[in-house]
Length: 438
Ligand SMILES: Cc1cc2nc3c(=O)[nH]c(=O)nc-3n(C[C@H](O)[C@H](O)[C@H](O)COP(=O)(O)O)c2cc1C
Image 1: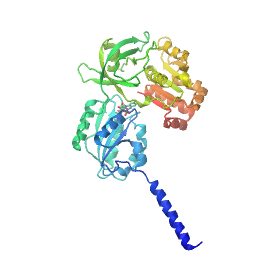
Image 2 (image 1 turned 90 degrees about the vertical axis):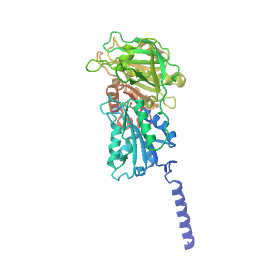
Image 3 (image 1 turned 135 degrees about the vertical axis):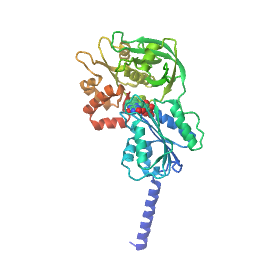
Image 4 (image 1 turned 45 degrees about the horizontal axis):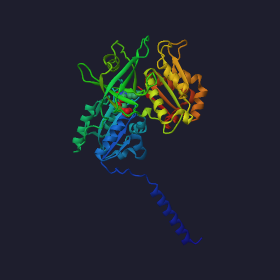
């Protein structure tokens, strides 16, 4: 080949390659040059909601930690003022959308020079590792030489005063005006009825119907403000069952009277089940709650719950039925519910039976830990392994509701055994394995 032509060809090829590289260069975020960077870590959606509402007030975008880290190396935090809103999940663990970022951060050795940060850590004092993930972030950032622009603020159960104070400090440090916290509005609700669902049981559990037209019908989680006689009020969160034992629809809750080890009652459940009487007013608000998000398309559900976790799965089933009626879409939903005693704890029996007769539930399995033989909800997955596999094959989504250390760990252990670790991870990534646990 003519050498001039060969050189020309090489030059054209090189140019084409450079053009390709230019087109495929990592895309910059529009606010990459902004000295402020707002990052959140959130499991249920509370930290995310706070960050998303704060972002426009700061004129920037909020990113979850892993989504940001997928596009940036950690050194891009240099020379910035970071604003973190981070909740804690599990036993002091980072939320799922912060796991990769945190892994890199903990291994990082290159210092973060001239980096300052504000950190709002969300948590709940009833957990032994209070705001532990926020403290991990704080410790690791300090280790790398970043400077705390304001002290870490730890927020117990979304305490509005702590959030407001932290925002004031943030605003003052940057000469900004930030309006009152990004908070869901409070409403007055009225307790219409309350019934004891298991009269002869050792562990009383109640159905409550509230009346509050301001709360949207598809709300999955509400927060109730509980007045305390001589102390500051407290807040407690409850899943909305959205259906009463008689099958009527409304703002329905299922609340078990909690008793601490020393015999004293839990303040939230005692207030709702003992102190309050029909006609009384209480202060509530709707909260974002991603663990109870419905699938984006009609899919069969596998709903697993124990105890008052029944509220969570009934809420999901009721909202699902409103969006994608089971019979119309040919969906076969499966509900597995574990309680204590087969004689005293058959709560919501006729309601669930009716849902099966109406074709909303294809299968209904109830288990009793004090039955003969004793059986827990997750045991049904073992005895009905074939059904589990065939439902997953046709795209079923699993929801697990109830206490994290009982139904939560019990079910994930069983699923790992039956399906393998990889499949469980895959289901989680696909948004087909939801833990709505507490
Ligand atoms: C399953 C579960 C585990 C939790 N573990 C902790 C914990 O270890 N420490 C803590 O302080 N808070 C813990 N919390 C409370 C949350 O951090 C708190 O409710 C927070 O407001 C949730 O924010 P998010 O919706 O952004 O995830 C836990 C909550 C849940 C549901």
